[in-house]
Every structure is written in structure tokens, then in C-alpha cells.
Amino acid sequence: MVEARRDKLKIKEGQAVAFDFDGVIHKYSKGWQDGSIYDTYNPEVLDLMLILNTMKVPVFILSTREPKQIKEWWNKQGFALKAEIIEANTLFFNNLSYVGITRTKLPAQTYVDDRGYKYTGQTVKEFLFDFTEK
Ligand SMILES: [Mg+2]
Image (cartoon, rainbow, N blue to C red; front, side, top):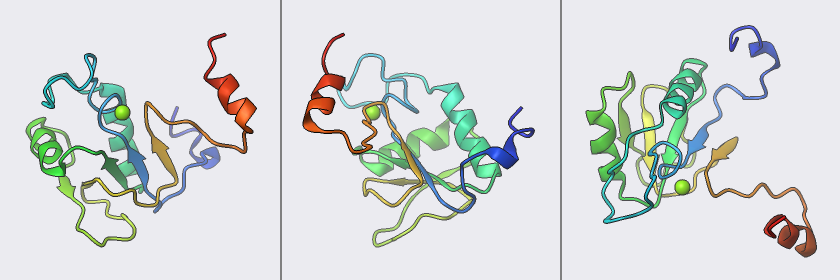
């Protein structure tokens, strides 16, 4: 299915997609707890990251966690791709040979985040309405 629609996919080759860690890659079913990575990974998200990489879309993890903690965890999981910490002063992440990890918000064509709010020009009223129980 992915193959059949590839020509219509609005994801660009060579431009990164950023993934949040907690609540996206890491299931994080009980919230922060003691700061450890205690939960299982989300297999759908892992598949997505690996498929994007094979489609020449660089992927990186953007998290406030210490990058080393994520790297050690990731590299123990046995995924098809390794993860590496993105060097300081990197302006664009475009490496396809590993999944990048950073605390710095680098440019990306989209940010996959469980707490994201897509801003498309909402007014104050519209914003507050979106956060009002319906
Ligand atoms: Mg999150």
C-alpha cells in the first residue's frame, strides 16, 4: 500500500522528520515516573521511522531527555538502524545511515509529537475553543 501511493505522498526525500520520544516512540503509559525508560516501544512508530529512512527521509529523535540515555536504550532494542547523537552545531540533519538524537530543535518537514498543536493561523478565541471540553 505504501508503495502504490508513493507518487502522491507529501513527504519529501532528503528533508528530515522529527519524532518526539516520550508518548510517541516510548509508550510512556504512566508519564515521567523516575525518568527511566520503563515502557515498551510503539511498534507502529518504529516501522514508520524505518520505512521513512528507506524512502531516503532522514529521521531524528527530538527530546528533552539526555540524548545518551535514548541512544543506549535504542541500541539495546535490536532495531535495523542504529541511533547516534547529533553533533552540536549541526544545522540540518540529513544522515540516512543512522537515526539522530538531539535536544535541539533542528529543521524538519514535520514534527511527530503527542503534545503538538498544529498552528494554522488560529485566533486567540479559536485556540481557546480547541482547548475547551466539548
Ligand atoms: Mg511527548
